[in-house]
Image (cartoon, rainbow, N blue to C red; front, side):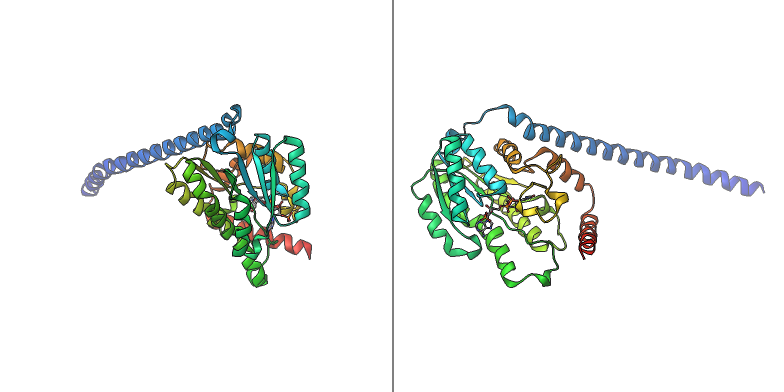
Length: 325
Ligand SMILES: NC(=O)c1ccc[n+]([C@@H]2O[C@H](COP(=O)([O-])OP(=O)(O)OC[C@H]3O[C@@H](n4cnc5c(N)ncnc54)[C@H](OP(=O)(O)O)[C@@H]3O)[C@@H](O)[C@H]2O)c1
């Protein structure tokens, strides 16, 4: 009996200090984790306030800083039209590049009348691929292009990959992917020569996720974000600003198929409000959602592992498709 008590006492004397050390180690890990989360949250909040609120307090001289003309692709509707109007409001002349000539002329007249700036229009269907750029280049040749907004984009309503046609696939590649480097290639030499200019690429918040049923759209947007980050790093000290915009929901024709995303509200901005907010962030962030509530949404989603977002999106689409049947 006495021997058993002695060995239990011996074990406790040996084990308790070890347990105490383990407890201290866990406490240190906890303190480190809580500290790093707090620092990250504070950093994000400070950055968010600077990009989305502080940036709006100062009037910008876009013409002086970047150049006289802005080119906006996909500018007859939605976010592109919003950008064209906002840049014109800041005194920039605008080259509108889009698909439908009638709409182009109407928007150009509207902008010239409202803001008293010069406009030019280029009809181009980006889905046709490489040969549309010669004509665009001719229109840009004698202009001091200060800002390029690579906005044009297309989205085919969610469907299984095998339900996309070959044309759908090439449209995605030509419009959402190829247009971004091809347009950049047209304006970059002039900007490098003048040592000033800005290239703004409109990606999407979905660039961070591999989305089932929107597989091509999300993948093309990942390209836009990745390409933009690389170009930003390459031309960091050239005087050129490169910015990636990753919005969440903006109420445009693109998402008119789903009333829940389309209806303007706290999270879904109207194109004009979105553009005003996004243009203000130029020079304040190389990659931003462009709109403060979108920033909140994306930060929240990034708390979850990607598999969770992917599976939730899959169930959401399947649920809505069942309801439609
Ligand atoms: N809306 C959103 O919630 C949202 C969210 C994240 C990212 N984005 C991105 O924002 C960008 C603009 O989207 P949006 O919602 O403003 O789209 P939108 O309202 O559908 O407008 C698209 C614009 O692009 C033009 N366009 C479409 N296909 C074209 C083609 N093949 N060639 C030339 N022009 C073409 C359209 O011209 P027509 O008038 O002739 O069709 C229109 O001016 C896209 O890159 C999109 O991926 C949108």
